[in-house]
Length: 347
Length: 292
Image (cartoon, rainbow over all chains, first blue to last red; front, side, top):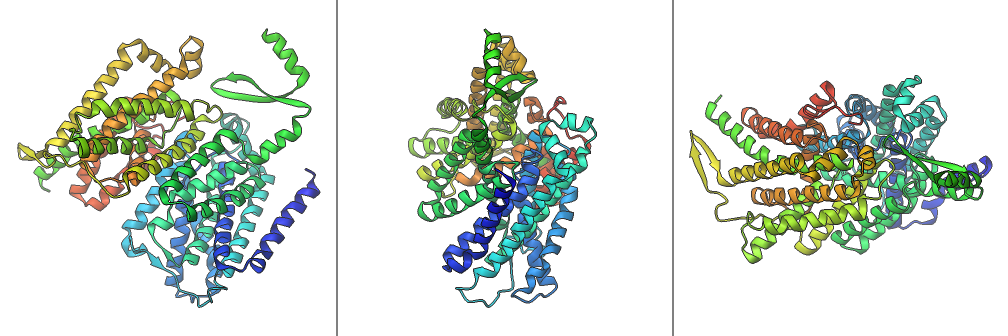
């Protein structure tokens, strides 16, 4: 794809999402659109650490939930009136979540990939446990209410939709800037081979932490808007493991590590899972969701966008497994002639 | 501070730790052999609990006796799951395995809910609450039996790993998957069997879990955090480390709940995790590996 086509594509999606609430005014549709946007933002911010650096996190709903609680508590503490003014506090919530993420990320990132995933799951559980147990701050199991705006039912979702869209655009823009910067290059180097990256002078520790913190801050703002839109936050809706899982799955479906992949994945999967949950009961939903998940990892392990890219390039070259080396599966792309030569050598 | 209470908490923690060790050791085994983080391990535990529950409720088979049925069945289910979903994983095996096993866990939860409902149940045997007193410490029989079962199965596993050809192949695979393959070990077969063994251990753990707790299909989520933290503390791929770590963590938790409060005890796992991450990220007991 040429650069111009790419920009046109992004603009088209942006204009379409700006116009969406004007065309589809049904509140039920808008609520699905809001959840979809939420996942676009979450998958994109997940991608900054999980996609670029290859550090899969299942703890993003920890910061999603933290943002929600921080928002509710801040609005209450400063006696902010319902309506539009709460949205002005969002950047503060983002910064607050990011600050909290610094020590957590520092501890979690002392481990490498496999253990890191495990630690992020624990992180999610810690935040949920805190929400349940720190009753005087969070309201415990009953939760915490938001000031209720007096918007009509037909209008209700629109402010949340545009607020969420703003944060989503910011998330994608941040991901773009990171990807284009030295930080992004460093993260990609970490994904490919962390030891080598460190050896050539990439400050791996601070780069990973930066990615972790940025991704957490964005997730915090997204969680804040979502919590405000449902008007009530409690441990189960704040820290939902299915949200962590969903964000990671959507990024994988579209293509982790690419800019458009998580957006595409979320646009496909988020409405589908919401629709599905309306039509089938909870048990069947879990089974189908699990099956879908297995199918995606099995059939499209690298995601839609990289797979399409492969298809486009594969006319002149062939994707082969070159060799297994040091426990890592090395894959490469070689010309058809080389394959013949290599097959000859093998015989 | 009441010394008797403290002693009671330590004994309870030790016994309960043995039961957790049974569950956590399977998790460590699968990671060690297959480099697979089986997030669905606790879903297998709950599946085992349901099997024992159904056998007990409908056929009145004692949960300790029905292990001769549930363990082989879970062994086969485990092997089947491994061959169907995990064997083909190649690139980024460890990380992808988390996604795949999470999906399996959701599937297991859905299937259990579909067939058994989502109400909380418990395996209530007639000896569930009987206990005896020794040196002023009250011991519930089930905890003792559970601990003995855990110790017995761990002993058998240790024998299998140390004394049989299969055990050698398995340990070779843990040390270096690639090299094991090169010297002619059928790594795929070893992996499938190891996963089966882990699932069978989960079935035994599940029977005990089901006697000690009320559970429903969603209970795997309560359990997995604890088990994962235990194996991080135990050095991730060390079966022995996982067992020792369970004893330590659960005793710590029980003692904490007596000397401070049960609310604080909920935090004990995370406090230990934080300490380990800061002091020694490779875990307390495990061999320091390149990856972990």
